[in-house]
Image (cartoon, rainbow over all chains, first blue to last red; front, side, top):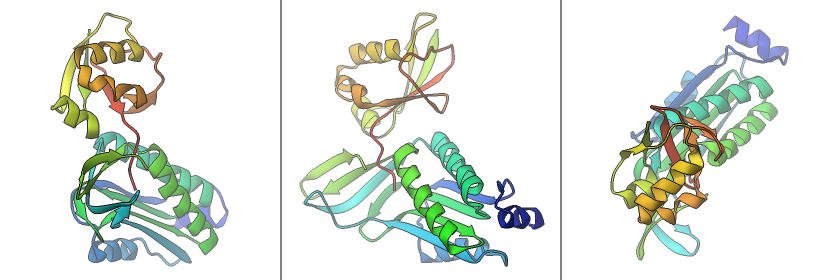
Length: 156
Length: 81
């Protein structure tokens, strides 16, 4: 961990950053997320930002009952790893986790978790925002809205 | 030559299957494959024009040339997050 700490402190590319990248069918529940954050905490990190994407009950004026996510898993993990590399390089992140659940999820369940640890909070916030925004734009994952009046694969 | 197709999301449901094999002439491009698939599976024809394309897990342009054994995936509008 000495190398990654030094790289982060000097603001250089952090090739030694720890990455946890996963497409999973398992629930991303509170226990899982807390364990992930604990696992990513080291003494040189002053800021750890966690983003959780959660299934909400309405979209485009429809009452959503559930979402069903699908992914091209091999490519999705490869693209998420690419984002993690970029986050390590640009913001000196020491730990990056990107997990996306697939399968059917009901309202309130977590579909995606991004955790970024950096020496300072500003970088951690910016890096986490970049990671989830880029995931949504480039990673081959899809969602189907299941509402009272039917089902539909939707963008965004 | 043959390329392997994998279907996901709306394409998988519309095609009613997860994978397929496409027979194409040597030197065929992604655009050629798209035309042939639309002709073979009219139900997919509506979806294919809005799809991005990946070959061997990397995004490519429509004029990319395919080779024997490639894994070709049409990527409908994304919905991750």
